[in-house]
Image (cartoon, rainbow, N blue to C red; front, side, top):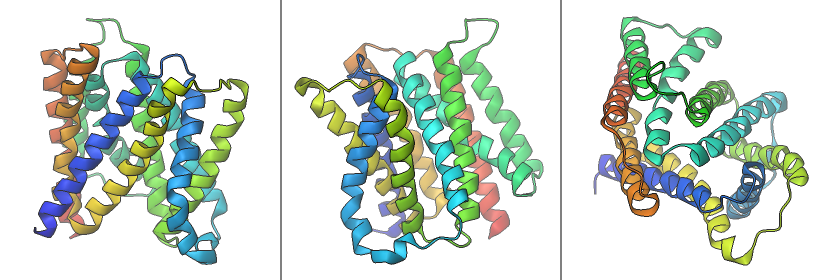
Length: 283
């Protein structure tokens, strides 16, 4: 199998894992989002521990602890917004609106990293957000708080991505993962304490599933980008939409409307165009 094909399959696996995580959240309706995030992080860290221990003390070495802390504030806040949004709107809507993340990243990188926003990027941003408006249809249908929550999550994840670009200048990938695992666990432990609810045994499969799918998503994306060009493998991230449509229909009797489908296609096409344009400029 070629490297490109391997990269594609890893990205498809990541899309499946992320969709499965959303399903696990839906199967835990009686638990606080804050508690679910904490328990997911505990399981996630346990799964990552063997790999991190093999790295030894060098994984602890950093001179940018504050930057790690800032990145993980964005990640944790994004997790809270995303988990909440998943409980409020259809899985297909979640996947569709999350495709705005590359567009937010382009704007934030221009503002804080001084990256140039040329005509190609600006066109992609405008078209992408037009696609988001098609899905949201403000003034035509009531704007759901879950919709705003997913858009906020996309924005916060983009902030984290931009900070990661800064960290990548001096920090190894393993160091970034280590501080992400530890600090987000600390961040999530404090609010989880105030909403603690001992999980019922019947809910444990879904709880464990949160940790496994979270780890799998991160691992599969990392593997995909390691073996394939980002501008190619990112296309297969769109598989989140059909996965979400199918599981939403089978498990929760959700039906995606034509406006969501059209908006999702426009948003993803704009994000892909922006990614390809950036790759050409940097290449």
